[in-house]
Length: 405
Ligand code: SOE
Image (cartoon, rainbow, N blue to C red):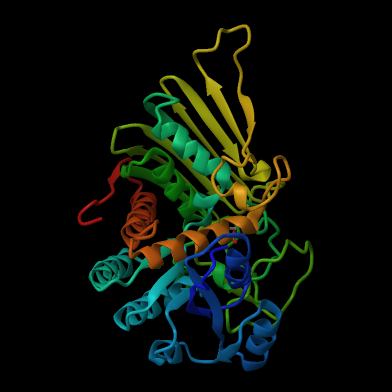
């Protein structure tokens, strides 16, 4: 820690369900493990239900609560707005916050449509000219093993990238009796598995390779078209919490208006082919986000269910001993690890969120643009949109627009 105390950075967070809880622990923890140039203060929590918001604030460590996000925008003492609501409110809140000169962190996917994302990216550029920063919460970028993968690719360790195969598999919707939460409603979530988890592997493909998508061909599938309505609708957006086989939680059924699984083939700007699969119906796969990048000199492979490990294949090894090497990314010289535990003690899901806050705070203090930027968020949005259009039109090749992103 430095001798002088850092200036406060007052944060307001909107939404306190799954992502709000993950972000809260990050704001609470970042300055206790990392030496930060500013002191994040968890000032204000926003939620529509007053009792639940107060309860959440007490549990998660927020000082005050309010029921109206506009109060955050009006308050001069708030420096950062952290948006953890369902996608249908991201654009409105982010635009108002940037306009008011507040730094913005927004959960992924950045928006529910390309039009919204374009507006947000434009606003972020204008705000940046006034020193106002913005970032999209693609938290998996901050997993040490994946940071290491990016470094190795940039250093040329696997040579020229030839192919990417990425999957994001969960099974919390495979049970048809799981209730109809907001994540299954197009007007709230934008899309289903595609935007919720497919967005992560699209972003990671870009992050690891340093490239963008040139085009895709997609196929979406909805296996269960109606689900039981939840017993009690959460005003702040209820979350998945396991499958609960057999249990009907409410009266009546409602229509599922998003995809349950999304498949796509695509090409990067270099021409390298990519295969993507996102499913919330993959029995037995809980959070299996896997990505494998094959290059001309070797390959890298990662699976979030073993998230401290990066498998590295060096094609230069003689055949007798060649094989994927299991690299445990828990050494002090692996990204972020020094601040935590001794080698082999491992990090978990929540650490990515803490690292995200750490990088965001450093960027704000240094007056630099944090990544992923809203421009990068816009690119992901355009890929999501192209996958959807390709699926609807049964088109074999749908270019991804790159104008201005
Ligand atoms: C969805 O199931 C979800 O909660 C995503 O929304 C998160 O982004 C992912 O990290 C875990 O799964």
